[in-house]
Image (cartoon, rainbow, N blue to C red; front, side, top):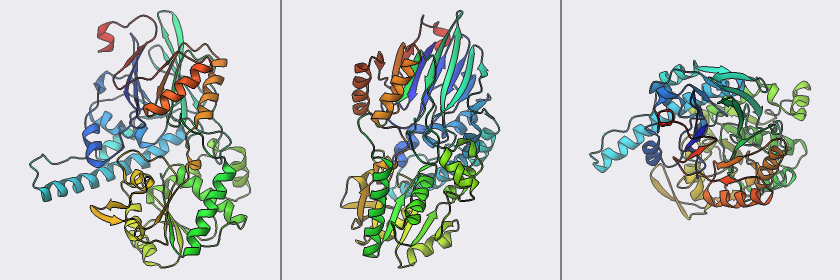
Amino acid sequence: MEIEFLGAAQTVTGSMHMVRTAHATVLLDCGLFQGQRRESFERNKRLPFDPRAVDAVVLSHAHIDHSGGLPMLVKSGYDGPIYATPATRDLCAVMLRDAASIQESDARFLNRLAEREGSAAPPVEPLYADEDVIETIGRFLSIPYRRPVPVAPGMRLTFLDAGHVLGSAITVLDVEEHGKTKRLCFTGDLGRYDRPILRDPEVAEGVNVFLSESTYGDRLHDGTDKMDEDLARVVRRTHERGGKLLIPSFALERAQEVIFALKKLRQKDLIPRLKVYVDSPLTVKITDIFKLHPECYDTETRALLRAHDSPFDFPDLHYVETVEDSKAIDADPDPAIIISASGMCEAGRILHHLKSSIEDEKSTVLIVGYQAQHTLGRRLVEQRARVRIFGVERERRAEVVVLNGFSAHADQRDLVNYAVATAARGAIEHVALVHGDPRPQEILAGLLAGKGVGPVAIPAPGDHLTIGPALPATASA
């Protein structure tokens, strides 16, 4: 067995790993690199392998940095199955179509910019169209948690609950070669313990090869109680100033978690009564999908649903879909909370709300998720005095607050504990850290080594990890 690390290697985006044996080739995730528009187009416009050489694709979850390249894969000639959980399949049906729409919009923007600058470069084309997404969704095969299925010659797949987002899965591959079986565990994005809505991550048994995410390998998250207290404090402070609280949020999981947190604070009278807008058509669709998958919920959330007390509804909460209603929010002078995509402020309706409120010292921008380098979200986190929105530089007078407690990723303690628990239930021979920046990875690798988990590799893009005898050149080409 050989593993090639094609994406999310020493970075936190574009998850893509190839597992090859003498008999089969399976792709783990097919994500898009996310960052600045032009850089993203350049890095995503071609796949780093031959799609026709892949026998099967296994998708860990629906986030675009893990799933967004699938329509390109199909468009380029891949005609095999895509294995995912039922919730992931349903989420991809709306998220990938939204990604295609954003790409068309971004291509128009870049082409208009190039025309204004007099560039002779060829026009930017979207990576794929809606028709490619529809063709891709037709290739999905939904596999429930904990049900082993053969996916390629000599490879059997089992999904375990990752607890990261709705439908997220830990991929367990049993790989048989030369009469021996090795068990590979790929965490995908690992969730946190004791979080609202979703269940805790499950631990795989008998793992020999362990691929772990490492996004927050260098830090700890705040607990739920402190997170709620901090959120309430920001809401009250912004309300007292008479401003708007803008919450750029990923449409999947983060938005639903923020909604649930606000609901609980309202029920405890810890925040004032004010209008809360969820201004993202994609978030509205995803929240509807949440309601269809109670099999992913933890005990507390299932109890709420049985009592007909949805975690995603409360008085003064408004789900906004039309452009006209979205514009009316900014025109209304009253204080309000606005939850809107995209989470890194690189696209979507949040940009219009930022344009309206970024120069208002009464308002607040609340960052509740990871912000990649070179994004508008990262520049806000860095407290830049001036930021560019829709190509126009604006003075930032609004307060910017960062609450990392909402992260759906495991923190350093969670990552170490999960790896130790996995090692205690198996015989780990190889560990590779993916989906993380180099510094957090180095710190996490040291902690794992200190716990006797290893040896630990930190692969760079294009690196190979060989398990057992090296493959013939023809099999790894």
